[in-house]
Image 1 (spheres, one colour):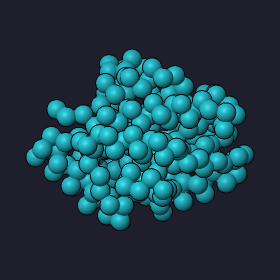
Image 2 (cartoon, helix red, strand yellow):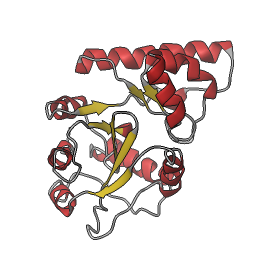
Image 3 (cartoon, helix red, strand yellow):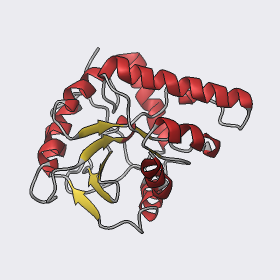
Image 4 (cartoon, helix red, strand yellow):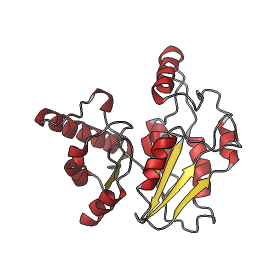
Length: 233
């Protein structure tokens, strides 16, 4: 199996994470959905910093794949103190170009179009798409000040319609994901990140019991609920 070498870009992020520009080393690096495009950092719950990775194809331009979703997420933090958007050094983008097995795709493609092509590349050629392996994650955890979020064990096959059966399935799949984290990484994740474009508001009660923080509905972080959840624990 070919490797994307993604963790090397995270090593660069860790250097920036501890840099004087942030003025605080008490940060937690959260790989949301295990994607290279967005890296979220939380510290003290009341403060949010965002690393904004630069576009691989053109290091001079900053970009997000999900611009609308990011705008929605930022609106949820308007009442929090201090929102900083930090452009990561172009060195990260330049370094990543050394890994020719990373599949790059145009930013104007939709997520389904992009992911379909990524899956084709994986099954046909064995080229890893833009995600980290368990070994990559284990390596990154050695950097310190790093946290990873659970994204769902098998959400592609899950029906989010409210019913007793689906509540049971969601509970079981959440437990499977937690156990997988414990088996592969040796700990239970503190954050749950909803898959994009999927809503399941009835699961709040379960998530509040299982995680310190969580996102709900189409990838938007309900910061107020998350903070209340942490305080209630």
